[in-house]
Length: 499
Ligand code: FAD
Image 1 (tube, protein in one colour):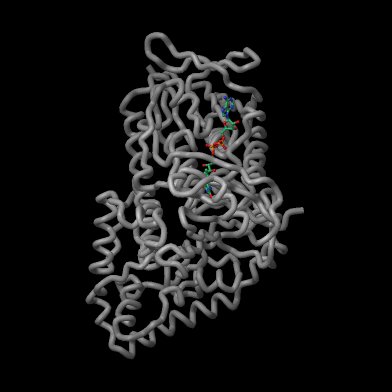
Image 2 (cartoon, protein in one colour; image 1 turned 180 degrees about the horizontal axis):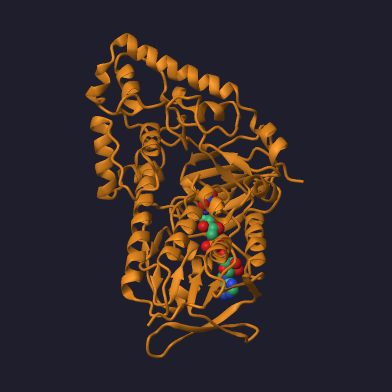
């Protein structure tokens, strides 16, 4: 009845495969043998270098020393993403990882700010953002809280070299018993009665069997899609970009503690600062831009000399109809792909691995467990999708066909309701399963140009003088905290510079 899973076979050694292997090696009982097969000839997608703060939970779970991790992956710190030209050409805002300002009484800060705006102040919201001000001055430090106030300190994530990250996790996983096999999977055979995966065979004709198979084979979905026939739900009507071209360039100064996402005519361009180079890429919609034009735009907007040839990538935004089917769980690009715009893919990998570990099956592979996993992962995908669609749809841009499409496309009802509520009353409704907190929705909605018609009446509890004092106190706290932080380069040089 309770026959435990004894063998897990992971197909794929990209970021998804090695995060899965590392977490399983750390958390599953020693009796479970974890094997990973990867093909050097096929290689990995080679992108995925910006993260969100949730990655620190994975590091904690694995017991990783973050300074060592940054040294090994030549990484830098990330306080948020600067969005340029999204709401309108010339606009710029940062979606930072922290709260803006600090709450007073039961009311979030932005209602006080909205009241001041309606009273004639022209102060930008981000004047009160510790993260924005630190980013503008290229400062970074470990700061949990600002003095003994209610103001949160710096929440941060990392940029890193994806290849070095996979190698780092590989060393971690192999040291804890994960067996790695190099080889190309050629065939997958299914059980004739229950349709589960029985064995996979490699080009070398070696056959590998397991109880549980994890498909980390990338976009192709070798097991979940090709072998088991699970379909793909296409979301490109909301997230229309379907190609990218990536190229590294020389590092230039200063070392910014944030990612840049600059909107282009039919997509956007990323800039990710690393210790040894800058990562760049242009994500675009092939319906409105040719590959040559995309490469041209990318190469003419680098801030250093390119150090490799541009690498093209193709994808369809969306998700698997089932993430877990029979004895196979898909993780990483094999399970779906949303825009890289908010760096959520690596988060989805770690979140799916922790869900799988929570719901770890026995050999019965019962539908109740599988159904719950699929339900939870589906909700997370949809909530992230809505947040990403917001960036494209909430724009005044009409200057190209791509932006006209985005501005006028119909959006999921769940998103439309959120936008209306904020636009009317400045209220942020958060679904508890949502990865993005109220502060994220606030910054992106305001940054993209939604200005609430009213603020919460509780903000009127302060007199005009009290309101002015409160806002200047917050501003002073932010300035004081920022001035005490080292420069980002200095912090890295002292704590985690690569050899
Ligand atoms: P891959 O890296 O493609 O790995 C697949 C593995 O399967 C490889 O080891 C390959 O060799 C193996 N394999 C495939 N077929 C076979 C076979 N037949 N036999 C044996 N082995 C096989 N995510 C973020 O979090 N932040 C970002 O900033 C970000 N930017 C991105 C930008 C772009 C343009 C794209 C496309 C993605 C981005 N992502 C980002 C997503 C991120 O790159 C991926 O989630 C992450 O790299 C995981 O990929 P993977 O391991 O699923 O697939």
